[in-house]
Image (cartoon, rainbow, N blue to C red; front, top):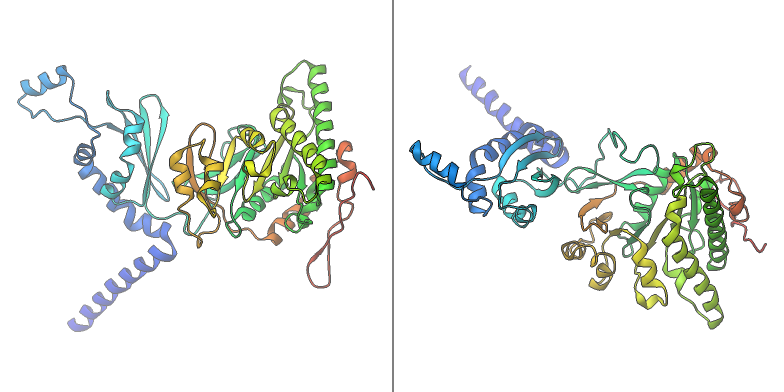
Amino acid sequence: MSDLVTAAEVAGVLSAAGGLGYAKVRAPRVWWSLVGLPVTRVRFSLTYQSTMDVCGLTVQPSRARAALLRATRQEVVPVAPRVHRVRPTATGIRVTLRLTAGLEPADVVSASARLRHAFGVYSVAVAETKPGFIELRMTGYDVLRRVQMPRRLLRPLRSGPGLVVPVALREDGGVYTRDYRAVPHSLTLGANQSGKSMYQRNLIKGLASQDVALVGIDCKRGVEQGRFTSRFSGFATTPEDAAGLMDALVGEMEDRFDLLSLHQVSDLWELPDDARPVPIVILVDEVAELFLTSAKADEERRDRIVKQMIRLAQMARAVGIYLEVCGQRFGSELGRGATMLRAQLTGRVCHRVNDKQTAEMALSDISPEAMVAATQIRPDRPGLAVAGDASGGWSRIRTPKVTTDETAAACQRYADLTPDLPALAAFRPAVVLADSPGGALTLAKARSVTE
């Protein structure tokens, strides 16, 4: 009987160990909650002082403190940042530290790799929460290996209702959002099969349910955006159509400036609700197709498109028109106006690229570290990218997998929200998406202003 009990106990231990091993691979959040979090919390508590000391994040105590320690016959030791709060999360631990005099956030950032190894976590990110306080955002496992977006997103929305879209998961376990009122224009670069189209599909799916007009420019004859036109207020599939559409958008911008002047306000969101026009998001799939020309006769059209895009990038934010530009490269080799337009695009998202120069185009004016991180993205991680903005902050992100069918279904579901803009009436897709016998969606070419 005792042998059976022993065998049962051994089998139970092995089953538990096997279950934890399986959870670590297939359900990392469960493994982290059961094993990783308790172990890491204990290790952090026991080794915090010594870790901060060897990482160079301690300072000598003040004279008053040192004199008090000597008077009480205590050893005078360097002072580490005081732990203000420890908060466990589903993916890691967040620790708020009160910096001691003589330290700055950059000191902790430079030691983040050493802290990661010392505390036995997957990554450590440092964020300044307020003067004198920083937050160590430690993740217990690779949250970007299998992207699982949190169920409770964007609560509360920082910029008010609408125009904030959860697009991807950050490497610290947080949600990366595309906030158009905070960052009006953005550039997304990436090589083929890098996840650039997946990023755009996440954007379109998130914007489809909001009170916003979507305008698509897909000069690959609409193969990327064509199935989403049930939610588009304007659509162009050739550079010729794109030129007319840009002229119409600039005309819409000028009409909106007249409206702002009439109400004596400087921003669309200051208008009364009954007078405020719907915001517009312009989605450019491959920006190089708008710049490149095959004949000298096309140069006039190219210059016209570039001029209008630059005008939109410089001024359209105030009237609620936002640019979302995608491409494989966006350098000076595209011709006049390319670098000027790129300089107006504040947000930057760089997926895997084929050369260092492309990463420099996107991120060199954001952060040198971000540029290096973008060149290290592996081909087997589609959707992984480096996101940054003009503030110098950046993070690794990865978009969840969203199929074309899912995005098209969302656009059809919210097709009734598509605003009818008179200025873009000539470019409104003239058909309704319908199921074909083969299960695909049938599309017709958008009408040009010249037709």
